[in-house]
Length: 171
Length: 171
Image (cartoon, rainbow over all chains, first blue to last red; front, side):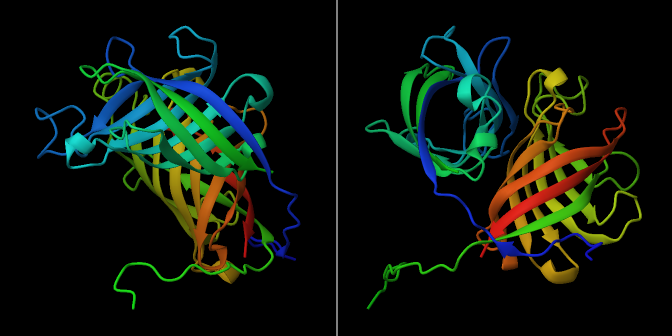
């Protein structure tokens, strides 16, 4: 039969999609001895002296996810991946996120959602939205959206606590 | 009529989704004269001397895909893109992958799948899972998941051969 790399293509027969709402807080800490967001690259023109989050600053993150907004609230996961400062006009500070939010407790322990889109941080008015483009485990083939609201932010250091309110469509 | 960027929105009328199983081996070689994975950025604090794959190390890849695990097994594609070392705790070594796995032989020659999620390398027990979030050609609008199992790994250099067993839903 196929000693090659593909099997026969068959009808998908997927079940009905379900939806689950997931709410947690993401702690993004750039300052101090144990930062969870670290800059790994930046543009030569606007970066460096200009601003640590200038256009083109690329950060890696391993941000804890907790149940509540407090620093020592119960940890239920972590957000790993990258975000890049994507707007030349810093008054419209925007990051583009490439992160995998994985849960380490409860029903969705071992599952994760992949988020990839811009996150218009400066749009303080309402809630911001980020796109869910995939997932793992119970959130396999997930899609949906996250409504993000800033719970707390330190303008000097950039440290922030964000409320993530995700609507996840999955199987 | 429309001098703008959009046309009229119409019903999608998509066909029934199909599913295809695709299995191959990905060769990720960091060492030697001809590496297929090269580090392009890293964090200042933990990078550099600490460990070549420390938190924040960002690699570009152009990894060959073969039918079997042997080094000189028939090449049927390549995986291009990036992965970043995403876990501060190196004992739970995890990479977050952003890669396009393209096929260059057989039925799916010219098609590719986009993978984007964490890949918990250290989770040796069962199989690890990576999210498929899109695709090109015959795998246009693909979604699904890849089960990954380490076939061979050199802990000193990081060189590894991984078995990728992908379930691809597509149209």
